[in-house]
Amino acid sequence: MSRIGKKPIDIPSGVEVTVGTDSVSVKGPKGSISTPIHSMISYKVADGVVEVMRSGETRQECAQHGLHRTLLFNCIEGVANGFSKTLEVIGVGYKVSVQGKNIILNVGFSHPVQFPLPAGIEAKAEGSKLTVSGVDKQLVGEVAAQVRRVRPPEPYKGKGIKYIDEQIRRKAGKSGK
Image (cartoon, rainbow, N blue to C red; front, side, top):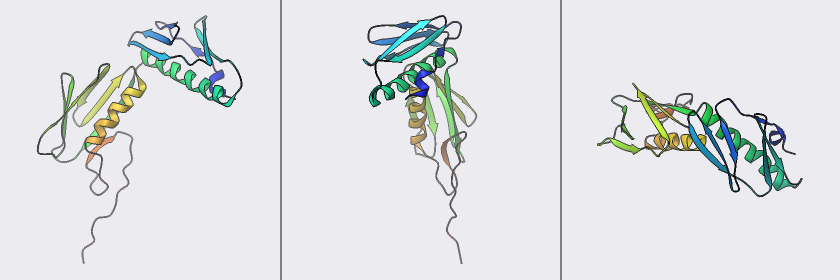
């Protein structure tokens, strides 16, 4: 039994949900996004609430029920409020800046690393902090992870790119005699 799938989704004001034949599209003040429809799942939009229903009680149907309810909830939340991830660049001489649709990272290589932003993603740099934001929760998380992969934090000095709330497990260095 999917307990998450049973919860109805409230539609905030300014958000419009349209159920099509193969996808559910959501439009709001931040933009628009769509999520695919599974053959075992049906949607009912009425009175500012979306209900997600399944056709049977098999294990697969229960799993798809919870999954597609969560995907639709994330779409509605994204167009209403948006999602963001904040990264921090730590290290002597390490800098981050945004130029147009590119993130420029100076993180200890012999050259600055240019990271192109995909469509629908915005970035803002403030000092050593980089905020990646957008409507699609999955895409925001993936872009933040790819930026972090350019120079992940190392355990000895803690230099690199890390999430703002990430704790780095530090190691002791070489011990001299």
